[in-house]
Image (cartoon, rainbow, N blue to C red; front, side, top):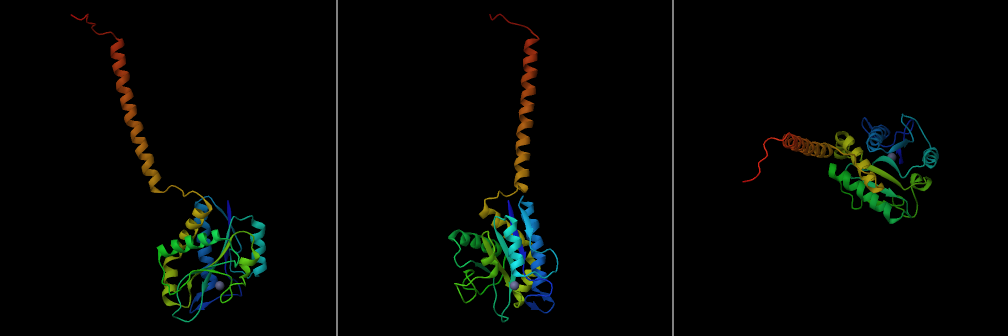
Length: 229
Ligand SMILES: [Zn+2]
């Protein structure tokens, strides 16, 4: 299993900016964490970029089309006035319903980590203000695709939430996507506990077997046989 992750913007294209915060740096930071979170689950990741370099949309889509990915996500941060907040997922205008299930799963996982939002609708199709047009990423890629806006860089709360939670957001994106793809979760502590419990049962059985063997040996040594009476 393989997925393709695109860190939005890069190089001369900074994307949205708020003070020292650059969208291109935040997207690359979280893209690397998303990659690690997928790999932890046994899913290989093809990245469109791993450095601060400029790529055209066509180059990004070409990398995805050649990758054989099971799905692909382009990571971004929104920008607007200071009060706009929240995360949104953009799907192809004609995306099948199951892509919506994926996007809702990812946003629910991100929401569980936490972010401020005044968005009325978080899963969208098409292009902002035009539901029949599409983002180049969604139009040009081959596998199920999503463009994910990880909060507004222009919103102080969303920006500090991103800076605090990016690793947890990355984990949420990978976990929800793997769930949708049917990839099994690796066993965490629960697995260790279960193993310890089973080893405990095996130890008790070994003890019991030892007792039975000792008893059988005692019997075969004869001892005193009573005739009854
Ligand atoms: Zn962007």
